[in-house]
Image 1 (cartoon, rainbow, N blue to C red):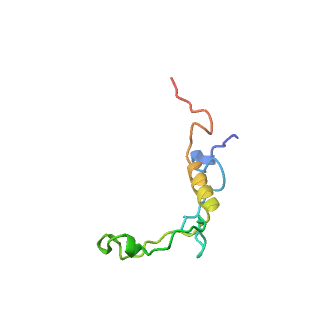
Image 2: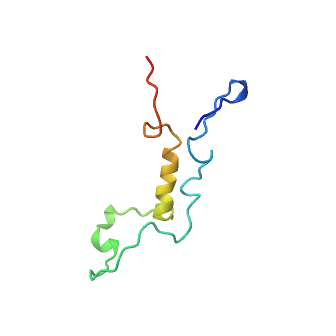
Image 3: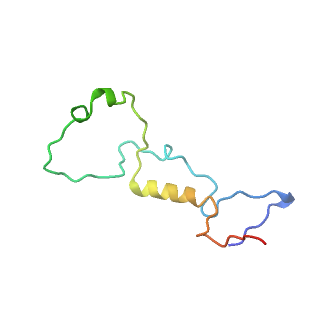
Length: 95
């Protein structure tokens, strides 16, 4: 893959792979989607309050993105390819 310089001496900061924009993980979120599925066990279900003292619990709801495991891994892989890495090509050290 060869990269062309922009006319007028402007450099391009386009990612090495994919398009130029990547939505945030929260923009990809879909209510009800989960990154994992736990299998059923014979262990009785207990509430968090039964297991952890109330003084140690955060009363605020922490916003978490609801995305599948595949979407989560793909999102962070695309973000990692926005930067040059030695695994993606030769890195000129100069002399």
